[in-house]
Structures are given as structure tokens and as C-alpha cells.
Amino acid sequence: MSIDGLYPQQLGESVAREFLACRQDCVLPPGTVARVQGALVDPVRYLIEEGGGRWRPYLIAAAIDALGGDSTQCGPLLAALEVMHTGSLMVDDLQDGSVVRRGAAAAHVAFDPALVLNAGTAAFFVLDRALRLVMPTDPRTQVSMYQSYMGMLRSAHAGQALDIAGLRTVMDAAVAGDDGGGVLGAVRLTHTLKSGAPVRCFMELGAYGCGASTQQREALARFGEAIGTAYQITDDVQDLTGVLRSGAPTKQVGEDLRNGKVSMPLAHAVDLLPQPDMAELWSQVRQPGTDRETVDRAIKVLTSCGAVHAAAREADELVKAAWSGLEPLLPASAAVERLRTLAQEAVHRTRLA
Image (cartoon, rainbow, N blue to C red):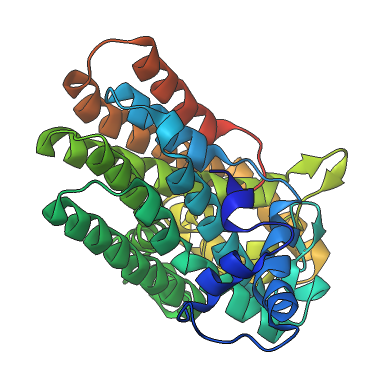
């Protein structure tokens, strides 16, 4: 099953009933299917059709094949992952006030923001429909898969909560010399919860689905968490360097700095810049609404002091360490090599989220 199977371009009544989760004998008033289409499907389809890297489904498919499973039988799971991720982007852009996504207007700009918030959140529940099509018959495995997914939703929402709350007071302490490594740890935790947990979860689901051993499943989950976290770290880096699509920016360069957000390069700068220089830099970008000229100067400082490089290196080391724990548990095969290659590409490519 592809994304079209879960979120079709044109709903029929049977799929609309799946969205509504209503009884089959429940009478749908005239026009209900069209209203469900406009309220729940169209905003998600809009962002899906703008493209994106879609590295997550490819990565999970490679992991399933590396474990000896058959990823071609897991289409609903892979499609659900991309739909769920799209929904999270819709909510994230609305909460962050981002107006560009994948080189086009963000969903909340193209549609009513309240509609987008609800449609994006509803996309998190697509996995329930997908799992019914690929779920193993063992009840204990079924429970474990649902527990993994529900735990991931808690983690991802906690990460988003910490991201929205921000780290200004933590950075204040770091700049004053009272940090003790707290700001780097805080950014790492946020990235792990928000971006690492979803990849970890779908790695687990793939491992459960193909009967992997407990040791393989746990190592694969750690590898997935490392990739997702590293991806977010390099996203912080690319926020400073910019990403183009057909010559046009996919989002505003320096958006994190403009919004007064503490990203990984800024956190690394605490240990790399002299305290007076760090204090001056932080005072210039601490509050949202920083002007373009100041943002550009800040990017130059973060690059020249080595903070951008330090963040990129951390992402590389994170994935390398997790892979060293997984590789010995996998049989040598072309599928394993593909998994390793896709993981590296996911972290390093110039990409769309």
C-alpha cells in the first residue's frame, strides 16, 4: 500500500469511514465525505505532494531487508511513517511560525491554521489503520508494537514541548559561566525526543514485524534514534548554510537565529568562543525578530569559531557509534550495506524535510 492507499487524492465512502472511525451502519449525511476530504486529507496531501526527502521510509525498508524480512510486504507501515512525519511538519511549522516548507508556502499559510493543526495531529493516528494490514498474529507482539508507538508519541510531543519552551534561560546560565554542559545536553535531549524517537520507533516496528531477535531489535532501535538525532543536528547546521531547491530556498536561512532559538551550533559555541564574544553574540540573537544583517554576522561567527563543524562532527560520531553496535548482529549482505549507505546519506545529504 502506498500513501495514496492511506490518504487518497479522492476519498471514497469506505476510507472516509476509516477516518471517522464510526460504525458501518452509521448514516453519513450528504456531503460528509467531501468535508472529511477537505478537513483531514487535503492539507496533508498538499504538503506530501511538495515532495521531501522521504529518507525515513527508505531507511526502514532497508532495515527490514537487512534483518532478512521483505520490505515489499510492509508498504502500509512505510506509508504511515511518511504521513505521520508530514503531519508533524505541519504542526511544527504552525507552532514555529515558519512560512516556507519544501520550497512552497507552509500548510498553515495555504490552509486555515486551525484546520492544519487538527489535520496534522490526526495524521499521527494513521499508523492504527496501517498496522491492521501488516500486524503479526502474536498478541504479545501486537501489544509491544502499539506500546512502542504510543511511547514514541509521548517522546515526540515532549521534545516538541521542550523545543517550544526554548532554552534561553539555560543559555543565559551557559554564557554567564554557570552551565556545566547543560545547554549542550538540553539541545541533545530535545533533538533525541523530537527527531530520534520517531525513527527509533519505526525501526522497532520493522524489527517486530520480521521476527528479529531482541538483541537485533534493540540495536536497530538505537541506530534509528542516532540517525534521527543526527539528522536534526545537521538540520541545525543547514539552517545556517541554507538549502536550495531548483535554485530557490526551501526555508529562510538563519531561521533559528532569527527566532532566538538555541540550536546545536550555538550551544557548541559556548565552549569555543571567549566568554565576552559569546555574551555579545547571545545578546544579539537572544530575542526573536533579529534583523537579517545581525543574523548574517552571527552565522559568520559560528562558522569561523568552529561551532558549525563541531555540530556536524557530533552528528557523524553519533551514527558511527550506533552502527558499530548494530553491524555485528546483522548477516553480511548487500541489504546491510544499503542500510549503512542510506543512513549516511540521510544525515549528510542536502535535503528537504
